[in-house]
Image 1: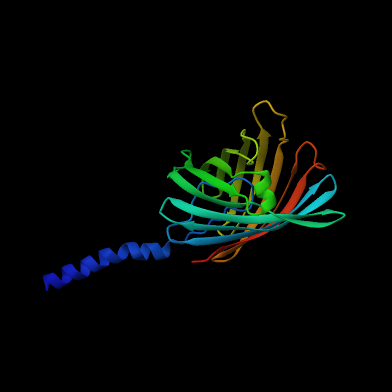
Image 2: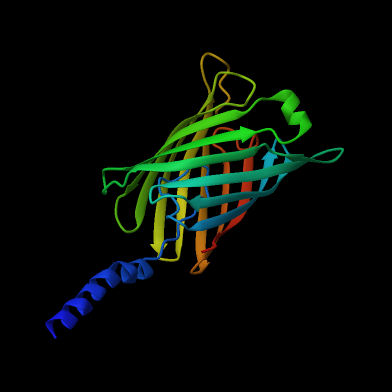
Length: 251
């Protein structure tokens, strides 16, 4: 009898992690916004994020083709990423352009605790995928350090600093962002973000601070919709955009 009790107890102990895994449900998209959070897709999970955006520059509009980001968790602390996109612009007639293919990984180094930030590294490589791109550029790497503080149940602070190469110039552009995420409800929230690209190393500054804001709503346990907009703080007519997106946790 005692042996049967021990067997049952052992089975219950083994089942506890499985029960906890079923109860804990993860859903966190990298969109909306331009900065990136420090969390990664959990092991063996796959997320698909699709975005649509319209850029307005000096009254000229460019429509971004659907940008598709596929993320897959390969360990408990790392994910791989595949990003494809493009844009259409009107210069007498509409011209369609495909962006270079971007592959990358995000690796989380520290889980953090309130004022101690989560820390992750995002490494990406843009690869020319058309003959015209191959004639103009080589591969273009990007490297970002990502930080995130979960201050309390309704406020997260995310900040991001990185360098991005264009495949032509050996000197990178510096990207800096600071975002405040507000969780109004377990299914809804908003963000306010300041971001900028700075052309570094003595070249002309190409970065006027930009401000971005948006909202998200989880319409289903595995599906989130979001809408956002951003503009040049000092000269809104020079650049602004609006966009919307959908995120789907596939499994």
